[in-house]
Image (cartoon, rainbow, N blue to C red; front, side, top):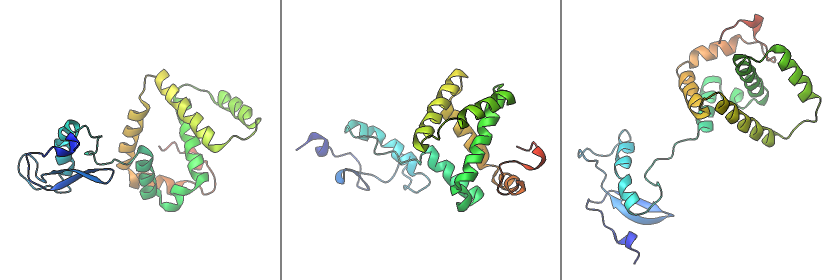
Length: 190
């Protein structure tokens, strides 16, 4: 028998840990204080048993899967704007362009430079969506590095901020004219 599968943890049975559908070990459903495992403390319990998984040479099976950043942003957009708006490609494109221009402006890019780049881009053939998304991602990472910013940290910080402002963001969205990327009278409201 494989030594990994022969190991019996010195605890009573409770949670079964499996790899590729095969039972490896059973783990007590109480953490060190003796409290029963509940949805509220499950992450703590799973964290506490990580050393056991490491001892057994198992992958990080004890960490509950966390939704990706993109999945969490999509959940926020759906909650904030509704399913239709969260999937509206034109609206998402306009909001992305707006935020990109605001970043360029914050970094000192002038309106004249923006218009020169607009003419240059639109003088060329249309690109493929997946490749252009890759280009945007790589270019944003390089821009962040050049500005000593963490792309991931900035994204997480902004997501945390907008999660606390859903009603305010909905109200701002409702004031925007329909079918146009321009805000009324450039209100300056952010």
